[in-house]
Image (cartoon, rainbow, N blue to C red; front, side, top):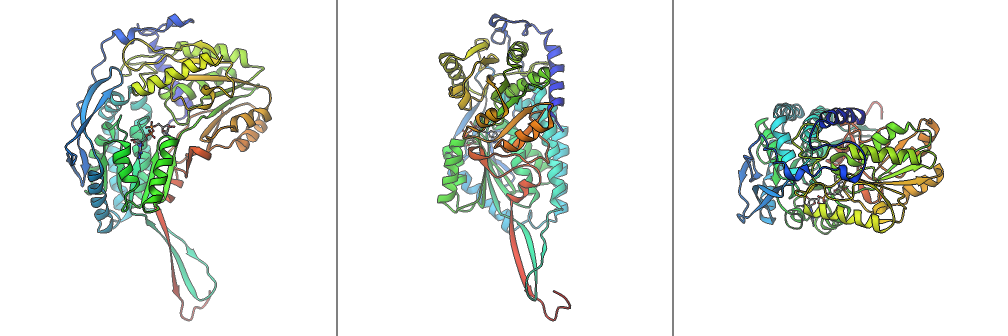
Length: 532
Ligand SMILES: NC(=O)c1ccc[n+]([C@@H]2O[C@H](COP(=O)([O-])OP(=O)(O)OC[C@H]3O[C@@H](n4cnc5c(N)ncnc54)[C@H](O)[C@@H]3O)[C@@H](O)[C@H]2O)c1
């Protein structure tokens, strides 16, 4: 399983090869950022897009309207493929077959061991097809191919095996009650799960969502993000090859206000799981409440603090803070986007953080050694540049970066701001881009208060050698995950989720199972019990 150290190691190996690349230049100064991304011909992905339709009832089908939408290559903005655009009618059809597959079987009626074997075979197939799936994901998202192939697909495979392992270990309790009754609880699948996912980790989010739902015996209708439909379609085809019965997993490509809203408000969807922005989270929660009051889990945005104490190993903290923010082009819900540094190590940290950002290898994500590809689309690209301008205008110090990288595609220079103040927009809003904001603090009480002074509460990083400081911060921070002297460690067994407006509920680990199970109490009178 990927740990932050392992991921950092992979990235530094990448960096070694990147230093010999003409795309890459070492040393300080804004002019060092190469514009080669614009002039180089994009590398042709070694994969073909074979499936572009909706997947309903085990078959690839066109949308009812016959409409399609383009999915774009973030390196160039060019069309990769035209994808069937699902809408209300398609969602309705998918929910209908998922309902039938749930109510009449075979999925919930199969033994747990049989369901387990399907998930294990799917894991093997995904592992076997790592190259194709990673190429599709990189093409659709712009994230480095090496990151997908060496980090994300292995995590995906691990999640499949982890939840396969749970399938035959889900059981209720025998409950002691007053009086002559035998009482048991049955943990039953909840029914048809509706799931909506974002574009920043399309394959990983698909896996987080479907694996626990399927392991518990539910059926699924999942909507992928309109920017990134390809990898989920491919993986779902593999799931069917692995023996998943028709109707159990239905994949709808399409847009939020149409297909997404149709899932959230459907009367026959029994459970909703959503990952995306906090604003959309509020909308789907309302749709769920106004329809059939389906229970909802929400994984939303964040503005996570990364706290570097004065006793921290500064070099390691710089590397991990860089990773915490810049990983995945800065498009992580839990990105360490407020780097709080103690005043005693602040100047050293800023200088080293700037030097590290200047070394970041930006370019075609299919190229070996590249650490950072383009942002997902023009909308995000423009939004990030706007935040950078706001950082400059509000008086933060631009240490490096600050502009687009090259002159085509949606590449942004790795950007570092120092002297950031809590009330600046760059310190308050989720930028979702490669923009590090460094803030100074004097003492632990002060940094706790400032770190918690946000609507978000997803994650935090704490860097210190002092166990007492680590314990104080871990307990005081109002967040769903605290990484101490590490960051972004995503084991299948570790729960993930947010406090406050970063979400409701937890995913991954054993906690995710609860999202997809109903608890039924069965009470039976006992005749002449020899004991109660
Ligand atoms: N907490 C987590 O685990 C986690 C993980 C990844 C991303 N995120 C968050 O996701 C956001 C980025 O993703 P995004 O820009 O795709 O978010 P988004 O909210 O715009 O979209 C997410 C999904 O919701 C759908 N959607 C949009 N409007 C909808 C509507 N009215 N009804 C139903 N569905 C709708 C979209 O089509 C997409 O599939 C960031 O805020 C990030 O922090 C959170």
